[in-house]
Length: 114
Image 1 (tube, rainbow, N blue to C red):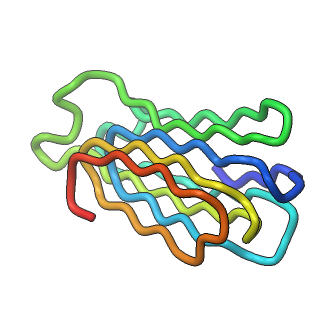
Image 2: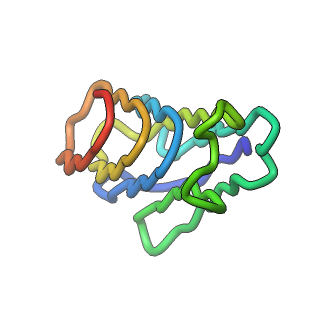
């Protein structure tokens, strides 16, 4: 996935991922940009969903099956950029997260390596 959504400062980026790494950074553009990929034997069992509601953007990484990747079957990576004056709500379970240069609010819930 490689998509761009125009937004205005003051909204919220909601990110939910059950697997893989997520790297979220701010930039000086009035847009949310998403680059995401799944690689490996079971990459077809990973889907990426990008949705907008008003000035908010939602990005979900969805997987089929709770045991996906236990034996090294899939590698999931997502990179997101958002306007500097924008908030982020990040929910992670089973992966790494990096958040950089926040001016808005940060709401972070994770069970994994931070």
